[in-house]
Image (tube, rainbow, N blue to C red):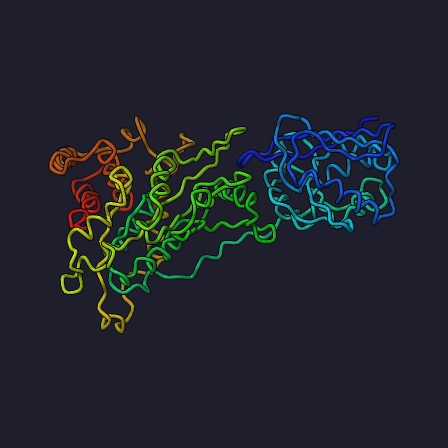
Amino acid sequence: MVAHAYTVAFEGVSARSVEVQCAVTPGLPAFSIVGLPDKAVSEARDRVRAALSSMSIALPSKRITINLSPADLPKEGSHFDLPIALALLAALDILPADEIERTISLGELSLDGALVPVVGALPAAMTAAREERTLLCPAASGAEAAWVGAAQVIAAKTLADVIRHFTGQSPLSPAEPGTVSDIGTGKDLRDVKGQERAKRALEIAAAGRHHILLVGTPGSGKSMLAARLPGLLPPLSPMEALETSMIHSLSGLLDEGGISRVRPFREPHHTASMPAIIGGGRSAKPGEVSLAHNGVLFMDEFPEFPRQVLETLRQPIETGEVMIARANAHIKYPCRFMLVAAANPCRCGYAFDPARACSKMPLCAQDYMGRISGPLMDRFDLRVEVPPVHFTDLDLPNSGERSEDIAKRVSAARAVQDTRYEKHNWIRTNADADGEVLKSATQLCTEGKAFLTKGAERFGLSARGYHRILRVARTIADLDQHECIAPAHIAEALSFRLSSFETV
């Protein structure tokens, strides 16, 4: 008799169904697993044997063969333990085979039969809903998987609970979804003294999801400004929350199965490797660019990142997705993030202060900022110089608008964009608009068109730079609730495109 159970293998954010076949045949006692298993899957036989032994279930003195189909698909991870155990128990007539075949299961087994939580329960639940099957997972993963309302999710603490459930002795209740978190960082933009131009740039960037570069002397407040950007962004929509949570589920970052509507804020160190930033490694896991999907990727000390890492960012910034190529697979992850980069103007950091700059100026600044290539610099919609704040200004009372007041304007501008692009599923903000969609969205008045043409010729804008000016001007007009883009909007967009540090 050949028994069948079902589980999933992960390919990016999607989960592909895998059939687990178990045959118990006469022959020398053996327990083998075939079908391109990795080391963790091959070791499942020892964990399954020990877990069954702890429940006083002895394996017969026969040959046990587990086949993971399709056999040419690589199988990775310890979540294959539970489906292998279920297929084996069905082959031994301990569990009803028809019930097992209507279930997709995943979970790691402890030696005492307890079920250990695994990553990827949310994508697995999506697959179970699509195939109209029940999902069986560890109790600690149930709250996460239960967010997919179209799938019935059963969560168990031990293998013994699973056996009692399928044999009708003690059926398990469906799992309940975890809590929704919408608590922000609590950091207010009003805490930043001065820097009104940088605050305005953050507002524009938040409204249109534009990439921004902050350049200033050490201690001028670049990191402080970036840390307050999430407070300006609207909460994730239900669709965005599900997209982001699926990526975080694969990385094991969902806290107790809860889904957050706060946009992610990732800040990798400048010593991070290429797989850490872009994704990859042994299991082709998502990198920081994907973990920041629908949120903010803050890269402090931007020129200090390895040049190869910086240049690799160019394509994800444009396409909103990253392809991790391997010899046996090509895995795609979404990465529609807002890039916020911060940098000192030179190695010593005081290129803007003649009294403190080093003797190597201006070559020091040219060499340091030259680490950011022209094509990468061209992808920043907003480039802002952050001047130093005098220590005597730190004792002044807080001034300026609160983050919540700015966030209201940002939400209003985002609402305008939602209406404008509602027929285009792949476009959500002005930064995403391209081609004919951008042309129809950027309605220039007569004076505005002439002003933009003159500015493009005067400053030698590339085609990409021209379109980015249009996108930023469109966002500024949306913040002002203007349908037509006026010369004032274009002038402000151009002012953020041209910065003094590029010519230091």
